[in-house]
Length: 195
Image (cartoon, rainbow, N blue to C red; front, side):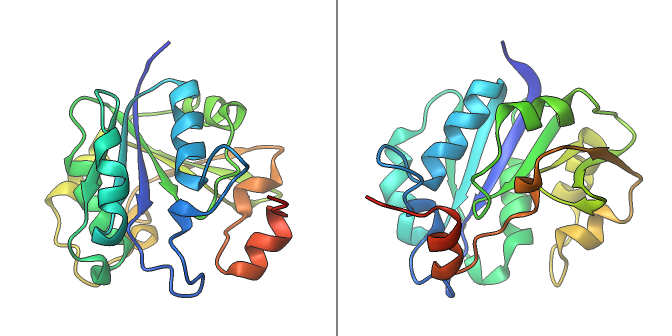
């Protein structure tokens, strides 16, 4: 079943603290972080999956583009995440809603996505919360998508932009929504790779 939503996976950063692209980190023996996120959002039913990548890893993935998954090149990763967000949102062909998913949280699952999506509204963006702390991913509506696509992104970040719009918080029972993997210690402690 396909839903009227896209996901934008932002994976164009330099991963300076990690030392290697987070997209390529092993989630398990079969998949890296990016493959895991694509699989999760595909299983959920997003009708468009868009991934923003930097030039360093774009060549690794671009050949896997298909009708549902598109990889877009961010030629200026130094412009920070908001530039990737705008590029990705402009690539949406036909979706009224879009999840914004950072590559550093591969723990998302279809149950969390269903809980967020079924609370969607054309008037507010959705953030999942765990014990009243906001987590990932956010779900934005067409109004916000269009606003971001038309704005100047210089010196802006997504959080500041979203604060211009009303928000709806959704309490979830999954602490994983709060996790960010920022460095190798986080990776070893949270993923515990044994492969």
